[in-house]
Length: 474
Image 1 (tube, rainbow, N blue to C red):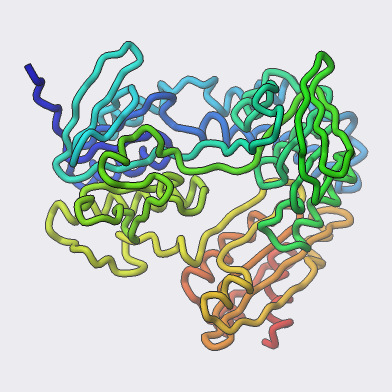
Image 2 (cartoon, rainbow, N blue to C red):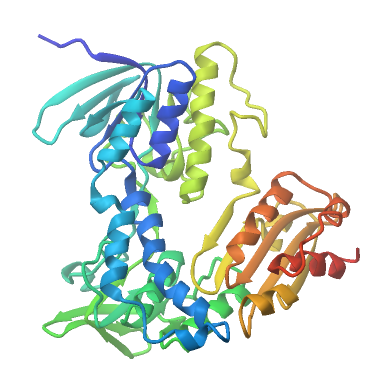
């Protein structure tokens, strides 16, 4: 006898920040929601990515900040206490206990179902629990994919046989290795390289191109110089031919014949949407080519009920951007269920993730940090814009007061016709705090003549805004 499916207005697959926001949003709009999660509620960001990695970075950053100010520097001796730093990390990761997150869902009116979900037909979801039990769900209005992403492991000979760390293992490490090789020079690899170096590891970073290749070269160079000054070896433009594992640890054989030996190897070479095993193929959808509209609805004539948000949607792989998309998805589902929204979604409305195309903020939380929002000059020109580029060292009084010998750099990309900022880039200690002002300027399309009247406080690092606008001719 076939059991009648449990019915909800919306079924959300994936219980990370994106899934939590989507489910909470639809319940707030008056619909019922079930959220399915096979691991920890709160997802990658809470336990193995954003939060624990920043907790590992913070002790070293605090020590270096003090060392950068005469008077405070004399009071600082030694390096951070690695054991205490790991205990603090444990606390921020809630000791990998998701009971608090589960309580939040219950308080928000979201039904939590633990297990692995699979689409079995239009608006139909099958959930297999850890004990093998199966529950069948039906969604009246929508199913939302919020399954996040998973690491991409390069096909380097010997790597599969080596006991390497991914970012999960690194951020959850129980001890600091004496030496660490990092394969990959992107955001996560660079952040964790500095975190472990400041906690006592001898670190070598192997980057196929250059360090932080997705960011402007002057910004990336500041970070590379800082890492090297702290004793990190940065090998740029080096491929890895093979990996060897022996009693003494890991050996990377590089394409120039050199080798890197370390107790531990961290592989951080990118991520891809986690869409395998969800049953998309049976619905005629290719997981590798999933397309969504501005409201997160999956493209396809018979998929009007299927949505995706966050990493699963293939957009910016950033927690804050995924949560933004989830809120748009939730509001769109509620509006369509009530007949208030059709297929067309107005840009910059609550139903559209318009900022994904032009105003995505991101921070590399190294020291110095790199912060960016919007488009590079190359991206803007590819979009058909005529742009001017303005650069300035962050050499204002506030920066010098903030840290002795402060080194920083800033760039604005300005739409020449509309005279609005379409991209902003900063590098230097604590520049993350400059970014939201730039994000408001880009998303709000604020004319530079009006920005001239947003007077930065003296003496702060934000005074670089005045210097950039003066450089532009105001």
